[in-house]
Amino acid sequence: MKRYPSRRPTAAKRCFSSPVIEKATVDISSRIKDPELAWLFTNCFPNTLDTTIDHTPNAKGKPDTFVITGDIDAMWLRDSTNQVWPYLAFARQDPTLARLIEGVVRRQTQCVLLDSYANAFFKDGTRESEWKSDKTDMRPGVHERKYELDSLCAVLRLSCGYYDATGDTAPFDAKWLRAVRVIVDTIEIQQAGLNEPGYETYSFTRTGCVPIDTVPFSRGHPARRCGLSKSPFRPSDDSSLLPFLIPANAMAVVFLKKTAVLLRKIKGPAALATRMDKLAKEIASAITKLGVVQHPELGRIYAYEVDGYGGHYLMDDANVPSLLSLPYLGFVSASNPLYQRTRKFILSSRNPYFFEGKAGQGIGGPHVGQGYIWPMALVMQALNSRDTKEIGECLSLLKRSHGGTGLMHETFWKDDPRKFTRSWFAWANTIFGELIVTLDRERPGFLSRRTF
Image (cartoon, rainbow, N blue to C red; front, side, top):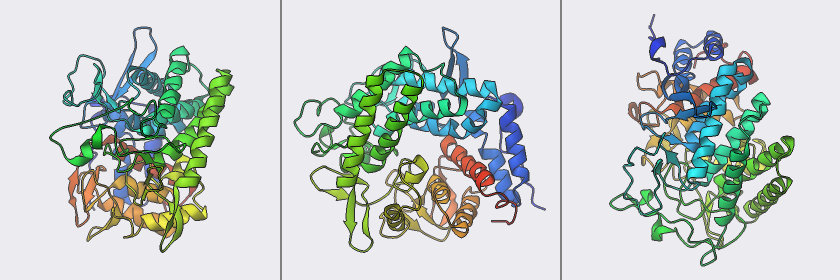
């Protein structure tokens, strides 16, 4: 019988331990018939807690949680939300886990107030960034200043998710309210069209790099005001081709609305809640008007990016938010015909970043390059599928993709999963764990009936 030794750090070397997560890991893995899949889950699900957490009280005794992304010693707003997201379902059962996630909300608040245009941060301002020469407004404490709309949406998502999971209002103080206002201000400013006030608020240039690591003309290609909000960079940290990224705008619609609901529940500023609802409605209307386009074979589908002039770009990228992830984020139902047509486009050779090879098939993106499949896209494909056969095929490929390491990676080569990037990428590990937890909860018996 094949043995599967644990790939987790020893208990003494783990950054944080939750008895509830430990129990859930054991219980769920015991219901998985496929031993290799169970082993992968056991390694991956607690990986964020095991390896990426720095959880200490701040100067005022409040929880403060800094979450590195893995092999890069910095905290991304997007990644940190996704890394702790699956643990929210267990937070009521473990007060120490709830405090840890409260600490992430507080740390993200601090980051937004430092710089709402930055995507990644250091724990304090003493570190010198390797990107200090970027031509943008770099500040102490900022690791990288690539403005990505979804980073701000991720902060709203975790705040709403934390409240929904715990009912706790502790992190939603005056400082958090200031950060929410800054987020709304930033999203509105980035609605500006070419030569309008606010258009030049953010600029970014990186020299001596590949084109996807910098912004054309320092502010991107021309954009026309249309109700959408610009995102010069994608959730992959690659520069956008066209200024308005539809998946990020869809995410903004969902979490502007949800945060408005949260504000009303905690008796926050009514005017701010109304403003967020109005902004969400404006962006949603623009997505319908400009973000849905005619495909020559499939009919009406969502575009990936648009410019407000009528130009659009059809593709999808593995990183979330993506078009594939729209039901996962709550923007649209998985059964929606428009989404289903878009999904058919995404998961085919019509999508320039859909790759097929000897090892399997799936979505990639420009970040690593042609031919590399991202496990997180396979996870998202399974999470948004209604077809048990498709889900099983995704699990089978995920199981084969780890290249003998027992952990998920950023990408793997389409012809050989032993050729992969980023052996320590906590988001990929945790979202794989989230898939297994979701299947165990929503499809009882599915994991125990077969091997994959």
